[in-house]
Image (cartoon, rainbow, N blue to C red):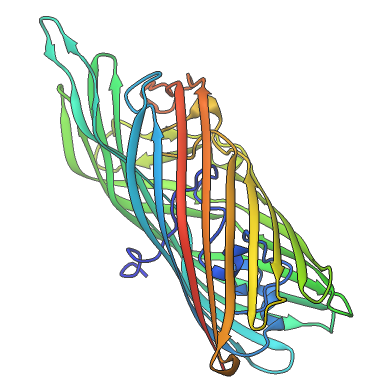
Length: 416
C-alpha cells in the first residue's frame, strides 16, 4: 500500500475536512457522487457494499481521476493574500466483484479515500527589529495528506427488493505538514515530514431497496470512524533555536459518515438522483503531535471543525443508443469555522461542485467506458479569523480565502 500511495489519493477537500465531494469512479463522479441507492458495480465496495448483490456480471474496474487544486489565502498575517501553487493530484481506484452464488457476492478494492493538497512557496514570516536584527524566516507553508483504503466486501441479496453488505477497511495515511508563522516578531518554520501509519480496522455497512418494478430505489451507507497515527520526523527553525530529525507522531481521524439517497425513473430514458451525506467532522478538535525525544515547538494544530453536509442532485439520460449522459450538482457545507481558518486546510465557506459525463459500452457490452469532469470552488472574502490555532498562541488570519479544483475522471470496466 505504501508503494502505491504516491499514485492513489484524493485532492484538497475544498470545504470538507479531508474529503472531496466526488471520488474516482467516473460514472458516479458525473452523477455528483449520488451512488448509494443505485450502485451495481464493483465500486459498491466504496459507495454502498449492499449494491454488490445487484451486479449484472463479475467485473474488474480501473478508475483514474487527475485533479488540479489551487488554494489561496492570507499566509503572512491579517488581510494579506497569496496565491498558492496549483497542485496535481493523481487520484485513482481499482475494484473488482465476483458472484459466489445467486445471492452472495464478494468485492474488493484499493482506492483513494481522502486527503488534502495545498502549498505556498517562499512564504516570509517575522520582522526586522531595530538593534536585534532580522528575525524573518522564509520557507514552505503546505499540507499534503494522502489517505488510502484497501477494502474487502461481502453482500447478500435477501430478496428481490432488499440487499445488505459490509466492507472491511484497511486504512493507510501519509502526510507532510509544513507551517510558517510568526511568534511575536520572530518567524518560525515547523515541519512534520515523512509521516505514515496504518489503521487495521474500519467498516462500511450498507442496505439497499429496489421497488418491484425497479422504477425507484433507496440506499443507506455507514462508514465507521478510523483513528490515524502516523510516525515521521519533526523539525523546527527560527532565528533563536532549531532542531531536526526528531521522531514524532501525528494523530487525527477519518470520522464517521452516513449517506442516504434515492433514485427515481421519470420514464425509460430519464432518471433523477438525490442524496444527503453527513460526516462527523466535529469529532476532530485538533491534529496532535507527540515525541518521545523532546518537547515539540508546535504540538497541536487546533481545528474545532463543524460537521459536514453534502447535498447531491443528479440526472441521467439514456435516450441515445448505447450512451448515457450525466450531470449533477453538490453543495457542501463549510467544515472550518471562520474563527479557526487556515490557508492550508479547508476554505471556511460552502463549496459548489458541478459535474458532467457520459458512458458507453464496447466489445458487445464486455467493456464499459465512463468519462466525467468536475469543477468545484469555495470562497469567503471576509473571514474574521482571530481564533488560536496552535498551542503557541498563533492566531488565525482574517481576510480572503478561496479554493478551486478541476478534475477529469475515466473508468474502464471489464465484465465477465
